[in-house]
Every structure is written in C-alpha cells, then in structure tokens.
Amino acid sequence: MHNQSPPIETHIFPNGFKLVYQKSSTHIPITSVLCFIKFGSIHESAPIERGIAHFIEHMCFKGTKRMDTAKAIMTSYDKIGAYLNAFTHKDHTCYHVKCADIYAANCIDVLSDIVMNSVFKEREANLEKSVVKEETIRQSDEPTDCIYKMDDELIFSGTPYAEPIDDLQYHLDKDVLPNKLVVELYKKYYTPSNMGVSIVSNLPFQTVKKMISTTHFMKRTPPTGICPPPEFLLSTPGGVQYKLLRKKGIRATHLTIGFRICNYKSLDKYPLFLLSNIIGGYMSSRLVMLLREKHGLTYISTSSVHAYMPFGQITIYTMCDHTKMMKNKKNKGVLQLVLDLLADLVKHGISQKELDSAKGNYRGKYLESMEDPATMSLYNGKEVILYDNHNPVPYADLYETFDTPITKKQLNDD
Image 1 (tube, rainbow, N blue to C red):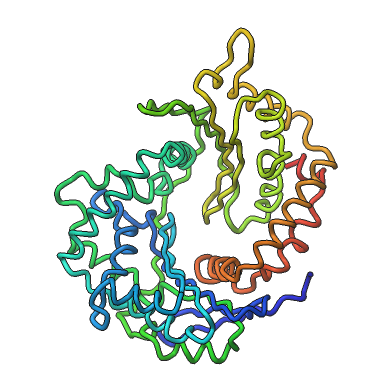
Image 2: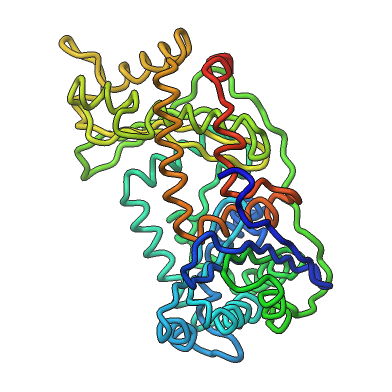
C-alpha cells in the first residue's frame, strides 16, 4: 500500500486561490469537491460576532445575482443527483459537493457562485436567522451536544476554542447577527487568497485546473491576504476542573473526561489516535469491556481525538442511568471505574496484544474510509489549504508511514 497512491498536485492561481488535486483511488466516476474558507468561530473577535461564521454558511445557499433563490441553487444539484452540504468548524468553514464526473464542471461553477457571490437579501437573512435559531434549539435539547460544549469550555478555557461554534445564547438578542456586520465579515474572509478547493476525481488534473480557471473563484477581490487565527496566551490549568449541568427531562447522566494534547502538526497525534482506539474505539476496547461487558452499566462508551493548530483534545464519553454514575455501597459506579481505568493505564500501560488489536482495527476502518473520495479530499484540503503543509503524506500511505512503526514502548512512555 505504501508509495502506491497517486500524487497530490497543487496549483495557486494569480489571485491566491489554491487548488489541491488527487486522482481518485477508485474507478467510480465520482468527483468530490471541498471548498475550504479559513473562517470559523475562533475568528469571531467580539461578542456581537458570535455565530456569524455559521450564519454565513447558511446564507450562501440563499441566492446570488445569477441564481436569486435557494430553490434555484438546490434544483441545480437535485436534478443531477449531486450531493451538496456545508459545515462550520472552529477554524474553518467547508462546502462539499459530490457528483458524477460528467457534471463536475457545472457543479464547481455553481459552488463558486454561491461562495463568492451571495447577495444576503435582508428578507432572506431574517428568515434564516429563525432557521438557525431552530437548529441551536435542537442542539440545546441534545445532551451530547451540551456536554461536548462543556468539555471544550474546560479544556480550552481562556482561548477562542472554548467558545461554541453556535449556541442558543447567541440568538436571544433582538439585534442578533446584524446584516451589515455579516456582510462585512463575509467580504473580509471569503476572498480567493483565504480559501481553496480540494478535489479528488478520475478527471485529469489539467482538466480540473481548467474548470476552476473559468469559475467565480477567479474573481479578483481586494488583496486581504490570508487571515490568521487570533493570538492568545495558552495557560496551563491548575488541578482538575469540572463542570456540572442539571438538565430537566432526561433520565441518563452523560459524562466526559477530557485532556488537552498536542497540536495538529505534531507526530504525537498518531500514537494518541491508537491510544484512544484502545481506550474506547471499538467493541473490545477497554471502556466497553469494563463498563458494559463486565459490569453492565452502560450501552455507549467511546473515546475520540481532535487536533487543532495550537493544541488538541482526547475525550472519553459515556452515559448511563443516573443511579449508576456515582459509587454506592454495592458498586463503584461509572465515574470511579473510568478513573480506575485511567490510573491503571498510567501505571501499567498497554499490552502488545492490545496494541496489535488496535492497529488491526484502525487499519480496517482506514481502508474502509478510502472507498469514499470525500475522505481524501477532506484530508488533502486540511493539510494543504488550512494548515499549509506543502508536502503531505498521501492519505493512502498514512497507516504505513505513521501507524505501523508505533511500538508498545512508545505508547507507554508517552
């Protein structure tokens, strides 16, 4: 598998717009296009700006000068069975199109129009504010969303990463998301030099480059350059931090235990991915065996890793009936069992058998992920467009390059 993947090719157009391309690893005639903008919730520098990155993502589907309604935009994709979606993260916004190769040129052109030429009609903006509020109401009712938000607040305390991407509290003021400010930030961040597309396709690189060259991505805008993330001082929390939230109407108690870890560019993230897998990444992981199979206390227990440029996080999550969370005369309870698991991990480390199982599981999931070209286009875009890695290891070579060499000693020492 190593060194057999197609090369990652890049091109920067005169206006600063980046193209990242890789030939698909399958023969299915599907093109995956991800447009990355370096604008997320961490760039919202004032309270009045909270939620604007997410709101702009919504408004880019509401009409352009050429396609003046949301229906016109949606129909252009629906009639050919293309996939269109978008998401806002802490440090970027991304628009995703997946379509048959024969429709790639048209789909990319429409995508460029909605990203570069959205018109932000006041009536549409007022309607969409209500829609976004409904989305945040749903999230505020969802316990898992609430507890992961609390996890971020504790782990990234004192930094822009502690703020949620969107939140119901952002939408309670009458003057929330003023349209003038929304448009100002759209024009500031949605510029060619602050964005790019990552494409995985069976179409040749030169064909894709020519497609891009005729789209609205080539629009010349005032040269703002790349908008850097905000600067902040990273403090070290003193002692254990915790936060409790009482929420009416639910029976289960949700628990996260999180730790701040290395940044996105650190190679230490690969051993941490494997460690997270051992803790709670699959059916025979430590958490599942301990909490579900041995004690019958939980149905769901997982572990996950997220990495950003300045730092990352590893988070353990589980939920159970509220009577099972804390220890009592008969049982230790879920919280104490998880803490014991972590203490044992620190004291005794992992076994070779656990490492072999984690690697096998990780490799299997990794191979499955390559069936979808969007996996490669997401990886390539994050590496090159977002995090300025000009020579990334191709996605198909990641496992052999970074995971195969990991040893038990390396994991236990770290």
